[in-house]
Image (cartoon, rainbow, N blue to C red):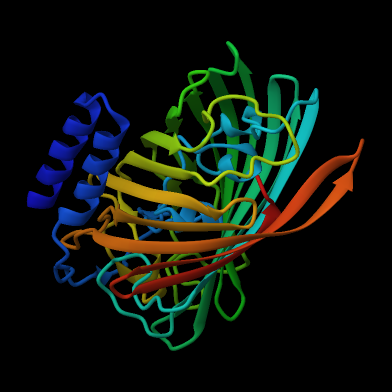
Length: 409
């Protein structure tokens, strides 16, 4: 396909250039020049057996409002609690003002689908579709070590073939440990992630739980403005289906899946900052209030899922192929601290990988605003500043809005 050829060319070019600006420009072109036309999906066929897996991959940018507002870039921007969502090295990455032997961080973010008739980009329009996403996390740092626990939930409300409401709740919990050394130049981390999927109709239908491993690294040369990151997430497969007292071949009219699967993912990212002081250094003080610009880009490979099927089609008791091939995603974004310590503006774009047969990926545009307010003292007179952020993500047949609360960093 022409789109895949262009994406591959952009990826090769980005890996070969030596300046951060060219890398970011290449990723941006990859996200914008891909065809925006959406092909008509194959007609899904009725489900007749249980020999298939629900593909849990979601191509839309999810996570903190910073991640979403900057077009989903996160691999090289890993820092603290929220950064653990995209890179398990993040718990050991402190803010530039952190100078004590220990520190901590937290985040709380929520996203609501404001227009999502085709949230998963599967070509099937469902005007009754609704989705909410939430994530929360807590991180602690001890000298060069860091650990974090983050939880993300995604709640989908669908309408099944009988006109009843079908609810699917996917929960992902991640426990990460990381360490940094070499004047904080190198940081590596590993995480255990556990996912569950609970599906209900007029009553609970089934629940599936699975687990996997994830690793990440971050390179921050001291005294420079460049950061590089990489992550590897192994696949998650849940096979023990907990059926709620019904025949799995006819549970409230549905044939239940034999398993669920989250594909493997490999990602690489780059970020660059321009400001009064160098990015990769400890600056001390209360806050790093500087008028600064950050630009970043990610490239991501998403694995295939054998016998994968989409969640939306399952609600209509139809089998629609999902994740048949390895897919490519590209993200690019920017953040500008326009009023030091008080206002940040964000924007980005990304290419959502196509996971369904004969349905191409689609481009997204994102934007966000973050406001800092209410500075206070806590523990040994250390000062903290709270922040409130909003974000939006828009694409054909898709819209997401988000709200976030946490520490200004």
